[in-house]
Image 1: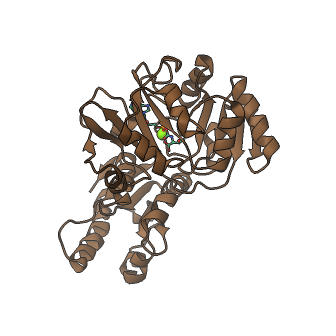
Image 2: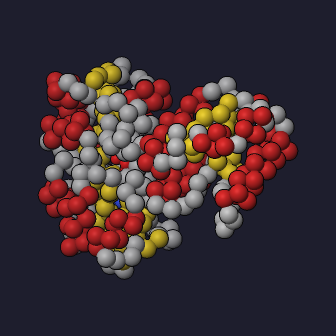
Image 3: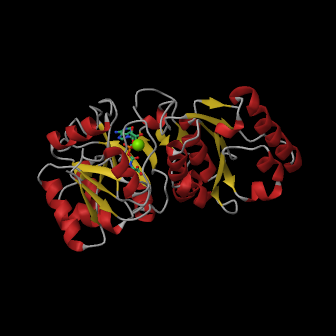
Length: 349
Ligand code: TXA
Ligand code: MG
C-alpha cells in the first residue's frame, strides 16, 4: 500500500525518512517537480526506482543532497565555477554533472563515471534528505516518458500502490525540472534546459555554456520523445520574424487548417500560452474547439512553466481525442518550456 501523508507534519517526514533508510521508495515534493526517492547508497532500493518507473537502465538518476558541502563526498574535480554556481543557485533548480566517487553505486549513474547532483529548494525535501542521513537518488515521480508530476495527486494517479509513501507538499513552485549542466575538461555543457535560465548561469561564471550534441552522455533531456501525453499531441510553432499582426493572423490560419488534419475541431483540447489570446481573437472561440484552456492569464513565462505539466496532464485525462498546444518563442525560460513541448508533441506544425 502507498501511504499518502502531508509533508507539512514533522512526524510524517520522519516516518518517510525511515522508509528511505530501510530501502523503500518515497515520492516527495521539490521546487521543480515531484521526485521518486530512494537511498542512493542502496543498490537494491535504487533498482526499485527503475522497476516502478519502467525506466531504461541506461538512464542515470540525479542524487539529491541537503548540504552544499556534501558535493565533495560524492563528486571529484569540483571546480571554482561549480563552487560559484552552487554558492548562488543552491538550494535551487540547478543540477551539476561531475566525475563521481566510488561510494555511489554504478546503478545510480547507469554505469557512467559521472554523477548528477542537486540540492533542492523545498523544505520538505531538505528535511527528508537530512533525516534519512543518506543522499537520495530521485528521478521525476512519473512512469518513464510520461508527463512529469507537479502535485501529489498526479503522483498518486500514476504510481499508486507501487511505492511506499507519497509526501504531499502541495503544488511545485517551478513546475519544470532543473537545468542540467555537465562540467567537462572541454567546457561546460547544457544537457537539459530547465527552471534556471542559462543566461543567469553564464552571467555568474562569465563563460558561454555549450550545447551538448554528442551521444556519449545519456540524458532523456536528449531523447526526442519524452514528457508525452497518451493522446496525439500537436505543437504549433510561433512564426519567426513577422510583426505581431502577421504572427497572429498566421496563428489563426494554422488553427483553421487543423480541420484538414483532425476533421472535427470538437475533438481537440486546445492549450494556449495565455488567456489574452482568446480575449483578442474571438475567432478562436467561433472555431468550436472541444475544450480550450491556457497556461497563464496574462503572458508570464514563470506561470506558464509552473502550469505546463499540470495542464498537459488534465488535457490528457479529458474526453478529447487530440491535444493542440500553441507554442512560444524560445527565449529565456521559453527555451525550457519549448524543449518540453517539442518532446511531448508527436507532430509540429
Ligand atoms: O528537477 C529535477 O531535476 C527533478 C527533481 C525530482 O529533482 N528530477 C528529474 O530527474 O528531472 P529525471 O530523472 O527525470 O531527469 C534527470 C536528468 C536526465 O536527463 C538524466 O539523463 C540526467 O539528468 N542525468 C543524470 N545523471 C547524469 C549523468 N551522470 N550524466 C548525464 N546526465 C545525467
Ligand atoms: Mg523525468
